[in-house]
Length: 547
Image (cartoon, rainbow, N blue to C red; front, side, top):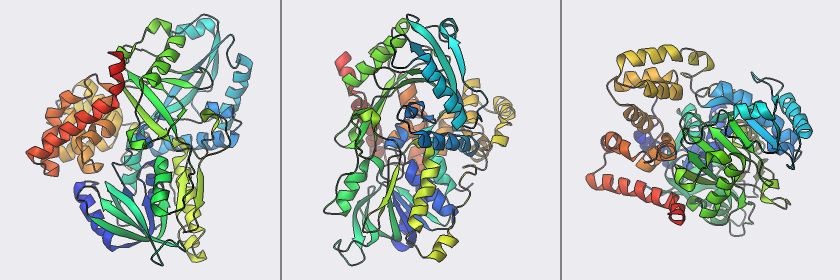
């Protein structure tokens, strides 16, 4: 199996310094990963740099849904919904271990914003825009049926509900799998490499012809330049910051908004399906997953450093209030919250009066210097955004390049070991693991459901005597370029979000593997533990207001 590790990063850094690429991508979130894979599939040589960890920005802080966007029908964005539903179908095939069908209930009440008839029309439209391809179409439930499905649901003034299909996913892992799918001689990819400026063909930005990106290796402090025929920005919420570092007269293009989520233990907030809670003018989801329940999101304008965004006491109170309105019997309090997370949406400015009305549709444009910028968009449509972004790049190329680099099959499975067909063998894999490993039944289920057919390769590489979290740690280090403990606990596995101790009890079993693989000294190990503890303190600082 081809690796994607710390050692591969060393080779990538050498390539980044020495080679001249067809395309240099700045930003290792979902749009950057998608564009890199799309370009590599066409035969282009690609450099990708990420200032922090892959998926460390908005790409790991979403609602973790793959959906057409019922709410976008209210904004009459039918084209956006159709695109998203079409891409949802593709993602079921591309990543069956990461994207899973999920039923959603939308309860409706007297005096609500919308009634049963209007929502019913929307449901038929939603199914039609999906070309009726989901296993289950929507269904209409009366008040009694709705309460039976969700026993804790508020029944006062309940008219009934609609139940429809969408999907949930692992957002961070979708980024890693997309990057892994692009591995090969045509890709030089490294995290913790920050873009600090631009190099122009005439030595200045006066005539603005981009020739390369000035970079700094955040691990060593070394600076160098990555050169290429074209440069693409996929830095999301950092678009304006990057623009200002490249150009003296950059005009801000984003209207960033903050989205906050809460997580709960499933036994404390047991939902039989996802629930759409339509408080005020925003939609808030309750999303049950195998390891936790997520509640979110908020949608408020944000100013500041996107890397420092976190939940505030006001955000927490707002979301708890929405849950109280729909599930008063749950009696959830701040003490029941396992974790929170917040992200910044890189929405492109428009004339919308409120945050929620700002369009989620993506924008791709070329600056006069030749830099291609990608901003906005929905997670669900990342494959399509990537294809359109690379097509946009090629418009500036000679006709022979446009012919040579025609779009490849980017809808093929991301991981050849994990296909819809191979998923059918998961029960056999689980039986084998129960017999020949030390894993519990739950751990067997987690490992196989998360890695599908790649489970066999994991066992072949590491043997059958390790604990579950050791397998996950080794796989993360060797296959996802995981360089820090905080990256493992927050993005490679859902420990921080789903466990009351945020996974710290797992630390003694996984730390030795980081030490061995990455060559940490005792001082580095202490620094890594301190960084993880500091992250948890900052991320959950809102708790002080509820103490």
